[in-house]
Length: 229
Image 1: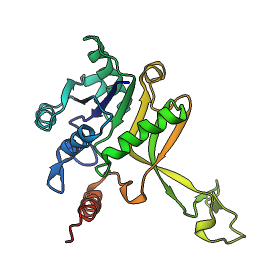
Image 2 (image 1 turned 180 degrees about the vertical axis):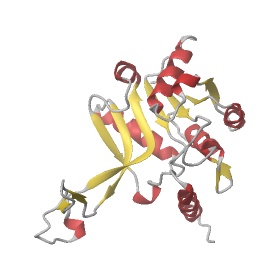
Image 3 (image 1 turned 90 degrees about the horizontal axis):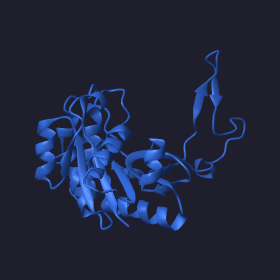
Image 4 (image 1 turned 180 degrees about the horizontal axis):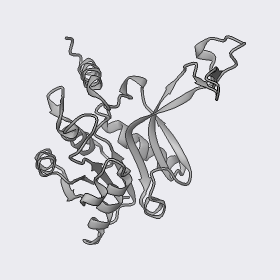
């Protein structure tokens, strides 16, 4: 059972310029993700797919292999699966195709090696084709109808129950996506066949999409390591 981790890390970013090279708790996002992947016991190879020379150099410094990502699949509107599929194609030129491909995203710096191993273990035990990390949450969700009026989405607004009594729902952590390689190549998407949720603690479900998220991620990382500020 061979397992490959692919980390998409393009150079451009609209929300936070050069985001993949920004540091959280003294470590660049791409370096932290590479280190997490290499520490997982089930992972055989770690590859960073990038169109950027500086990211490529930094990824190699942290121990990853690299694949040059073509410009045509490096734009804002391109899904990261395109980079993963491309990397698989490049590696297959050398006769390598893993049984399981894991996509890790640099924007989720609180991912742990155990999350990778746990997702793969769940895939094998459950017979799933795709597994993703998610955190359970209990919130009263609301939306708006076509007239702008509030609409209860996951509860009956006329019957107020304790939050803990809501049916559990899950938020995608944005960190770990484990996929059977044959299915990924056939579908070109991270979710296919039987999809399973690997549950992680809520405090590790932090995604960096804007400047303010860096402070939250750093505070969570330092707290997890017993550092107080």
